Length: 313
Image 1 (cartoon, rainbow, N blue to C red):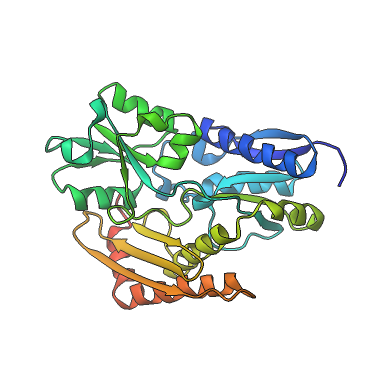
Image 2 (cartoon, helix red, strand yellow):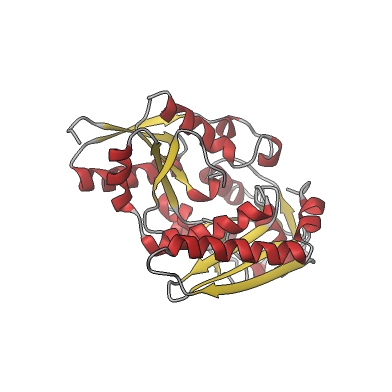
C-alpha cells in the first residue's frame, strides 16, 4: 500500500456524507493513508418518484459502483440495507464495520409517542415495511409516502405538514438528530429492514490488496447477522416494495426472527430460528439460516402476500 490518498465514493446526502466521513476516518487510522470523499449523485437522489417505481434501493448503489468501475473512486460506502442481494460483476464487498442501532424510531411533535397521536394523524414513511407495522400498532393512523433526505422529512414534522415520521435511529444519530427521536421501536414491535444500521464498504475485485486491508474493518458477528438477513431477502426475492422485516443477533447461537406483512398490517407471517455457527464457516451457517427461514415463509404464503402488497407505498 502506498501513501497516495484513497478516493471514497459517497452519495451527496448529509447522512451518506456523515457515514462516509466515519469510514474514511477508520480507513486512515487503519492504513495511515489520507482519504478523499468523492460525491456522486445517484438517480435515487434526484427523482421524487417512489423507490419501487425507479428500481428500488439499488438506484442508490448503481452510480457508486459505476464510479468504482470507471476508476473514479477506490472504495464506496453504502447503507447495507440498500445493497441488492445479487453479486455485481467486478465489485466485492470488502468490509462491514460494526453495526449501529438497527431499530426504527418515531419523530413526532411535542415529544409524542405513537400511542399519543390522535386518531387519523399522519405518519410519513417511504417504507412499506414501516407503514405496515405502524398500521399494525395503530390501525387508525394514516401513513403517507414521503421521499427526501432525513432533514427534509424532519422538516415536514416541524412545519406541521405531518404529525410524525418514522426513520432509522442509526441514521438520525449519524446526522446529529438523535435528540429528535420521541420513541424507539423495539424489534418486538417493529422488525427492522434486513441490514438496517450496518454499513457496507465495496471496492473493485481487481484490487485484492485493498480489499484485504479494508477487511480488517469488518465486525465478524455483525457480518454473520446481516448475512442471515440478506440470505432471507434473497430467497424471498423481495425488494423495497415488499414489507419484509428481519433481525439476527448473537453468535452462540445466531438467532433470527423474520416476518412478511400485508400492506395494512392486518396480515402477517412470522418465523424464527437459530443456528450454532460453525467457527470454521460461520457465514455459511448464517446464510443457511436466512434461507431456511425464507423457505418457511414462502411455504406459508409469503409469495402471494408480497404480490398483493407490492403496489403499496
